[in-house]
Length: 122
Image (tube, rainbow, N blue to C red; front, side, top):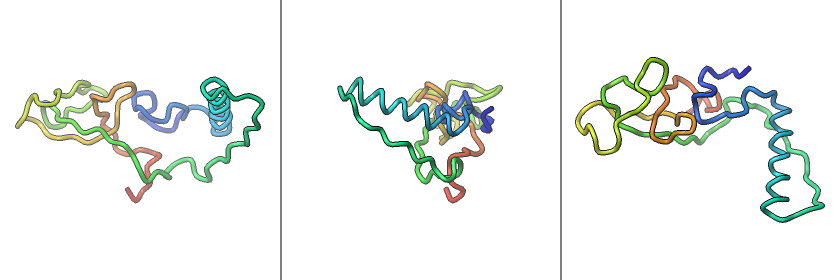
């Protein structure tokens, strides 16, 4: 089970529900597949992935979405409007909101209190 309460709704951490060693094995297989399929390579030795010492709280860089909502406090998420006003609409109304991408969307902000990957210093 994923420890993040936003898992599945947030656009990041798509493997968080999988045990970390299995995540590394999956990613290793992805790298081998890309090298074979797109790189047209074969017979290469793929070194084992070195796992991170800490799997949470390590990121010092993140990508955020910035949007203007129709009204203050109406962000994507449970019981809230999942579709903020498009750029140019509603100027002077609502507030500018900075947040994380919703899964498979780049025009909507997910209201998160804390990302488990983000370092405490951010």
